[in-house]
Image 1 (spheres, rainbow, N blue to C red):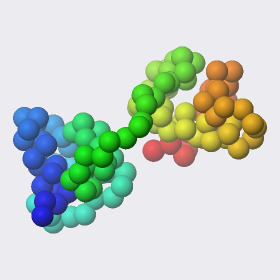
Image 2 (cartoon, rainbow, N blue to C red):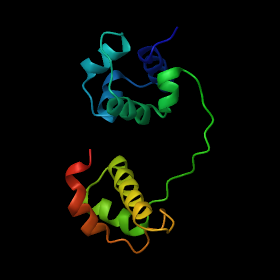
Image 3 (cartoon, rainbow, N blue to C red):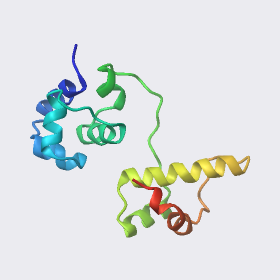
Length: 134
């Protein structure tokens, strides 16, 4: 049975990427990636997500080896949030995380659509939660 490391190694080879290239894209060391690929180390959820993004794979596939059809839709980043993210140098992951946090707060505080963040003060929100962004 194929392991997470086997799937990472196979996808990396399929894309013609070196361990160095994948490690840089996933913000990990080449040695750590080598250990994961060869079954010498386990990988945490955050790192697994970074690897999935670097390799263009889903977490489901990396974890199970199965392609699971999802009903996910593209993430729409509000223009004001995109401008803030650009100015602050936020990664796409951090920007998505910030959007998700705001949507949760809006959903818990009102009966409005949680995706309704068009009049949201992104600067004020970012300043109050920046230390929680990974």
